[in-house]
Amino acid sequence: MMPRRSYDQYCSVARALDSVGDRWTLLIVRELLAGARRYTDLHADLPGVSTDMLAGRLKDMERDGLAVRRRLDPPAAAFVYELTDRGRALLPVLTALADWGAPELGAPRPTDAVRAHWFAVPLMPRLARYFAGRRAEDGPVRVVEVRLDEGTFHVTLDEQAAAQGRVTDACGYAEGPAPAPDAVLELDTAACAEVIYDRLSLAEGVGTGRVRVTAHGEPAVTAAPASTVTG
Image (cartoon, rainbow, N blue to C red):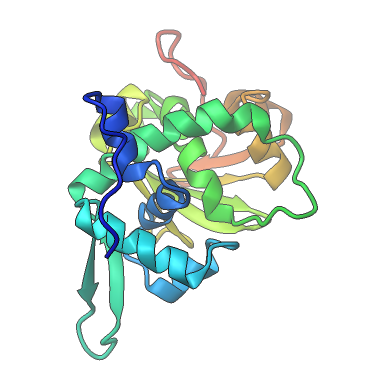
């Protein structure tokens, strides 16, 4: 294992970058926020990363306490990687970084790979804000299934996020449909990119029909109280 590189600066930003500032590290965190992943699955969803680079970054993340490697119980008998609590604490960092990078998104380039679950992190705070305070009589919306033309994933909002409309490191996402979602969101990839870029709010998308929402089994979602921040 290569020795840990450091900026050798007594600064919390520099210390953070000592752990996550290398190329690919934060994208590996993005993938592992969906749960435990096998090495081959990580490699498939990180197009462009070499096998040596991925293996090296995963070892660095283990060393720095961001991820652990464990063997699945039989009959799988395979190894998976998953985030530690410290690694999961990077979720709000990634949502902030996604907001900062959204203006650079634009239209997909011909060389761009696309995965549906890559929209989960930037969409998460907008879902939290949109569903906070809505349909209180039916209970909070905590599990949201998102259906894009690229695929399906689901987001889980913790109690604080569901009530206050903000993302915490207890929130998460996973690929595929949710077993029992509180709400289902259907939109195309172009509309999702506009929501992430804040050119289209979820409320406007629902109003114009570009976004279809069912919550607790009923179509559309009523307007939030005036005091609630909308997404």
